Image 1 (tube, rainbow, N blue to C red):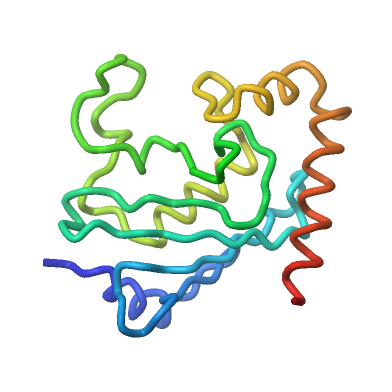
Image 2 (cartoon, rainbow, N blue to C red):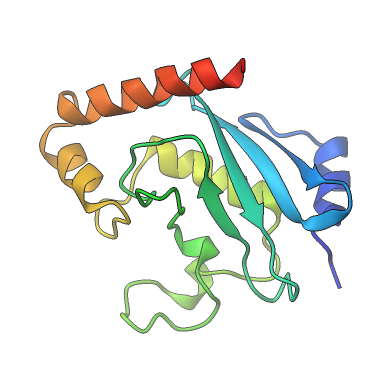
Length: 164
């Protein structure tokens, strides 16, 4: 069985640009804290967005849950911070027929592949399957206006919180 802590060893040996990750508490390998650095050339550039990754006891058979602690305005992040991307959805068939099984969780995914998907999501939102309908509507209808203004506010707040 591959435990989440094996990802720590992989990330320590091969760090990945764009995020940092580690255990919240050394005694609990199922609870992680991550910081996603807003990708360059996106509205999120310069932001430091804290999140948690909570692994189920039967990982890697089931995906972890990811939740942003830092406020973030994005079509694929629910207002409560829950991240909604395909690779974090339970494995198997999508009852709505939207996602292919290979787009959903597979036991080969690691913290690295999850975080790279999240960074990609920040750069390129999926407006067809929003977790935050209001953000998706603004992103589609006024990406350089109201949407940009709300994202910029979140980036500023994340920078202030990063130094607390």
